[in-house]
Amino acid sequence: MGSGAPPTVATTTTVPVNPELEDIVEGAGMTDEGRRLFLAASPVVEDADTLAQSCAEVDATTGPDGSHTFGCLIDGRIHLRNFTEPQVNDLIYVVAAHELLHVVYGRLSRSERLTLDPLLDAARVNNGILGERLEVYAAVNEDTPNEIHSLLGTEFSHLDPALEAHYAQYFDRARVLAAFQRTLGDREDEIRALKASIATMETRLDEIQAQLDAQQAAGDVEGYNASVDRFNALVREHNDAVRRVNALVDEDNRLTA
Image 1 (cartoon, rainbow, N blue to C red):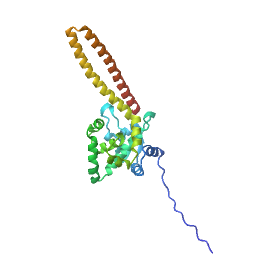
Image 2 (cartoon, one colour; image 1 turned 180 degrees about the vertical axis):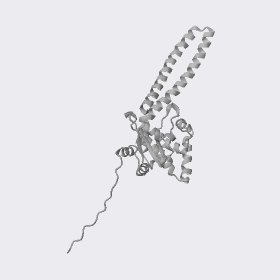
Image 3 (tube, rainbow, N blue to C red; image 1 turned 90 degrees about the vertical axis):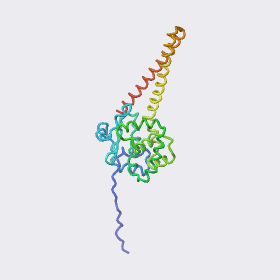
Image 4 (cartoon, rainbow, N blue to C red; image 1 turned 90 degrees about the horizontal axis):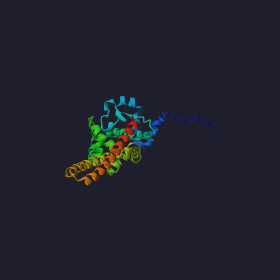
């Protein structure tokens, strides 16, 4: 019995994905669909100067406390900032997820947006922190459902179950939110709390000053001296809080410069 020729085996050639991009995919916990959309957007990681040029048309650096652009989606391509400081290295996972969500939103059908947009609007109601975050986008006329969609998905916890299910199709929100908190969120929360405390102390200082004026006019030396002690103690506390805010803002700027 004769033997036939061995069967032909088809070969395939695949281009390996850049390990840096695979790390981003893993760090953000992207699903298969999220990974597919992210890589289809030809993501590129750039230094700060290159990114500034890439994202010049959507640069949002005019926001509160000198907010910076860390990524953008231009002509269908994702550009991401390379963070060199170890304390904020993982911020790239947050930025990648943010830009991925722009890709996602851009692909939604009209009917899908009609379902999703009311959920985004509802999440915005009475959300002062989101309103604060949107100030930078409003300055460049980018306060849109698209931006709200990306911000909510990457920076805010405890969303409507329908939104959670939507975002879960693309990445692990718990992983992205944790990366946001340890790189920027914790520091921003402390700054926000300190600013609120400073405002309260300034109101109290005005009240004590009025009391001092009244006591001085009435010749109440004992009461006046007691109020002076309270006033000076509060001034010291106020100044310490201001110095802490300034230090945190300087640290934020240094780490993300």
